[in-house]
Length: 204
Image (cartoon, rainbow, N blue to C red; front, side, top):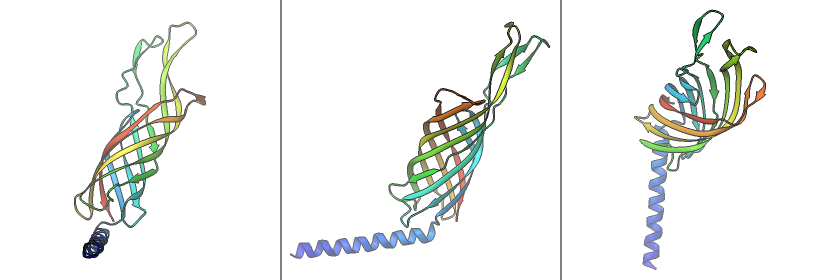
C-alpha cells in the first residue's frame, strides 16, 4: 500500500515537473519560425528560398510548414550546334518555382535545443524544361524550351537547432515522386523528386 502511494506521488510530481518544463519552454520558444534558405537543391538543380513554420499544439509536437524556393539547372551541359549559324548554344538553366506545404511531427516536441522532425508535404512546381528538337532533314538541332508543371508528394526529415529562444538553424532532406508531370500540355512519365538544404531563421 505504501509502495502504491509512493508511486502515485512520484507520478504526480513527475507530471507537474514535466508540465512546468513544457510551460517554461513554451514561454521561451515561440511557435512561429520564419526562415531564409540560402542553399537549396531539388531534382532540377540549385537555388534558394524561404519558409514559414507554426506549431499547432502546446507541446510543439505538430507544426504546419510551407517552404517556397526557386532552383536552376546550373549543371545543364547541353551544347547544341546550330547549322544555320555554325555556332554552339549553351543549354538553358530551366528555372523552377516550388512550394511544398506540409505537416512536421516532432516526436519529442519542437521546444528545446536540438530536435528531429519528420512529415509529409505536397509538392507543386512550375517553370521551364528544355529539350532537343531536330528538323525534318535531321540536320539542324535546336533547343526547345517548354512550360513544366508538376504535382507530387514528398516525405521529409529535418534536424532543427534552436541556438537560443530566437535564433533557429535547420537542415532538411525530402524524397518523393510526381502524380502529375506535364510539359507543354503533354503528360510525361513520373519523375523522382528530391529537396534539401540549409535554413537560418527567427523564432517569434
